[in-house]
Image 1 (cartoon, helix red, strand yellow):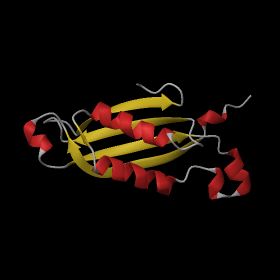
Image 2 (cartoon, rainbow, N blue to C red):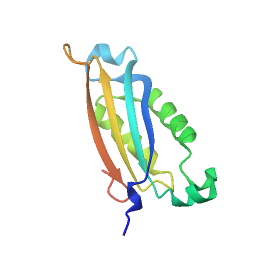
Image 3 (tube, rainbow, N blue to C red):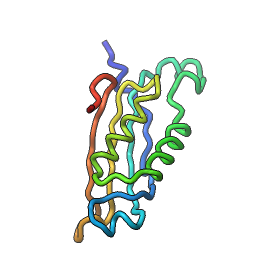
Length: 126
């Protein structure tokens, strides 16, 4: 039997600016974060119907994530990633989500530091 939870809608390289970090100076100036999001959903119906109503509307998802991230003031990238995952899981078609969040230039000598999390409906952190 095929597991259609492996079907994914992918959003790659979403670059946003927000207040993020625990140092005093980080609380003053928005910094860039880069998100990759994989939205796991059964895409068979959309593949057959060719209807946006049967799939994840990635434009709507990007707009919601953008507004939430740009208006956020989290200290930890872990908390921001958790918030983004929760937003994505509000979509009734999405069964689970993988969020990769990178913070370029966060540590001298690195390209970026980041986190990757996976969440599914029913197992979100409380």
